Length: 296
Length: 318
Image (cartoon, rainbow over all chains, first blue to last red):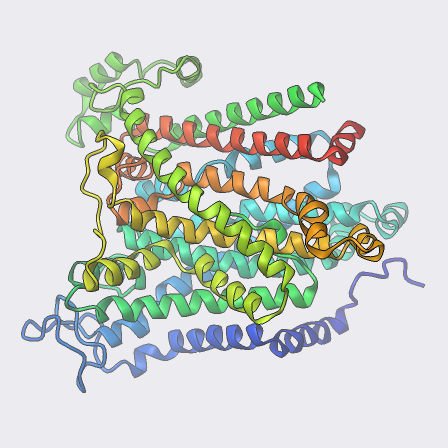
């Protein structure tokens, strides 16, 4: 008889995930969302090889040209091909957020589970710190770090991972507290298991569902943050194509050259909506009510 | 009851103190100070020394923190890095403008969100719910700068109905902000409506499925009487907290929207002061925004508790 009945044995982990995946795909929002996400990931990987033009190739005779056979989405104010830039405009954003998201979820999750298990004074103090940190707007924290340390990937990844890991602490701690008083945790304690073992074998499997949904949400928020920063001029540096930066550049000309804005707008929106539809379907599959902890 | 109130007030105060420490330490750790920012990079040696002496920057950090915190407590937020303007007066006008934006967005967003939330909750999974709930995902997830840009493109560039940018100066009277304020208000109300609506919807669904509503149905209470008198008072309680979060967000976090529309509120002041490395202003703004956040949330908790007797006993048990 195993006391840790809710812990998922190693060999069925794969089955567990494939059954979740099937459930997500069986929902309309999940199927559409996952399709958009996978499409964008593939596009980001292959776009440099299929783009008709070099993203930094300027053409002074073809500035703000209308869409046509040669330039499907026209050209921008420097005569660069908008289509080529749009399909490559998500690469940097997806690379940075694609690394930062798992890092944020893992460190925030570990810290959250730890404090949920330990409790007491230490937990109380930590939660005050977390509350205090969360009461500051994200953009203020991001900008302060970026203005000081620059906007290279080596700065952006740890910055995003740090800032977006803090709310994960709260989620993981709350999910841990739901189970920490249950019998199988007491049993593990009674067996004399170490804290690390209890965290890994008893708590993590129970918190994993919340963390997966949280991870999907964090990814979409990070993309939003990343592109907003680019839009404000604090992110990707030219001539690297980035949706936020492209929208900001093309805004001035949009009354007579709207495609320069519409291309990246559709690309960015479809990716973010795709992630959110997937997260929504995932939450429903796992029985987690996301609306209950909606954060603005 | 009073005891809980004091306890929560005290905890809120502690949070603000911790925030002020984080802000001060954060700004302190970052390389550069008001003097290097003010004197640019060429300042070295004696000039820098004397500047630091003038501003008292060579005193120990702890001592300066208590000075700053004590003054802030009395409403004196110090002077901006250019050495002239008092931050309190700079912030005043901007805070008023942010409030104006927030009040406009709230007065549209909150009623709309509650009505639509009730409608979608009562007609769950019906066409109207699917339509609204799907639009909500769009409104919630599309970045604000994207929706703003598209709205400006459609209503300002193409149709020419509304001005796409705010040209009014920061200290202008309220009436001059119309109609320029309409588009930013629409963008903000869209986002907040989406968040509040989701909350109201799921709460209505939960309450409508609860035992006491079933009991009322079985007792033969007319449907609408039951909805308005039995279900809604309970279903709308959780909305208080999320509305509070929205208010806090509106008063501090709408940087992107304010930049896109060139609106002279706190958000744009924040980004300008960060770009200019005007650290005293950054510190002051961070403190104001965090304080608003903490106390708006606190008020919401208290309001929920007053409105819901069950929570009161729950808290005293702790």
